[in-house]
Image (cartoon, rainbow, N blue to C red; front, side):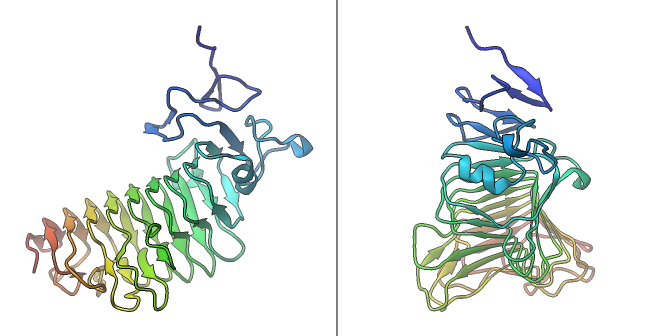
Amino acid sequence: MASKFTIHNGLESNSVNSPINVTTGLEVGGLSFPSLAGKAWYVDAASTAGSGADGVTKATGFTTIAAALTAASADDTIFVYPGTYAENLSVTKDNITLVAPRTWGNSKRVIVEPASGVALTLTQVKRFAARGIRFSGVSGVGCLSDGEGSLFVDCDFASDTSHGIKFLAETDTDFTGSGTHFERCLFRGCGGAGIQVAAGTGVALGLQATNVNVRDCQFYENTDDDVNDSGGDGTNTFYSQWCIENCKFMTRNKTTYLDLNGGTGSTELLVANCYFAVDAGLTSTHVQLPAGGVAVALYDAAGIVNTSTF
């Protein structure tokens, strides 16, 4: 007979005293997580468990996400309750999921904002996932990633001086950010780009961050282009097999929204069904495509632009 589930704070658990052992999958707010055989851990900035904090239940939750990341193993899920977490998070284990149990409304967001530096660093990990969390860098990027197959849903990315998220390949051709998926995310108020693809100085690794999907996302008031690349040493190919669709680029009359032509080689890239807050008509300066890139059904204040060359 299946064990009886208990409900606490909107989450289902098969025990109030031990982490969930997920055997049939875990779904919160319509999002299914890849951690099918792992445990669940709890983090609450307002926890009063003190020395009794073990992360096993919300009542005994850790007060920091870092403590949960240390306790967690590959395939585990960490539930993070609303609050501001002044932490520099580092994920080094595969298949870790961070989820805010309440994901609606900015006032209820989980905010990761360190005193200084990068909010989230993914170091050569696979299949990291996050939902409903704001990653805000201070004098550093919001998220620095060379992980593979990451998933971000309903997340915010921000930085006072740098990029919202930066894919950075330093020396390894296998971990460049490829396969990352953004769904309903917000990139706003970044001191650099919303999303930047980069290669280390002098690094020539070929394809960088391939097969990335950016869907139903919004970009606001980013100082640099909303999406761009570092160019590296000029021999890297960026944006191969990218799909940017159903996104809104809301900064009014920005010089360049998408600077996607900094690498070399032909790139199979699609920009489709996106809106740009341009009054005078969208041009190839606003959306700069690489060779092989295609733009279809883009919208501006003047109407629809439906061509790969503008």
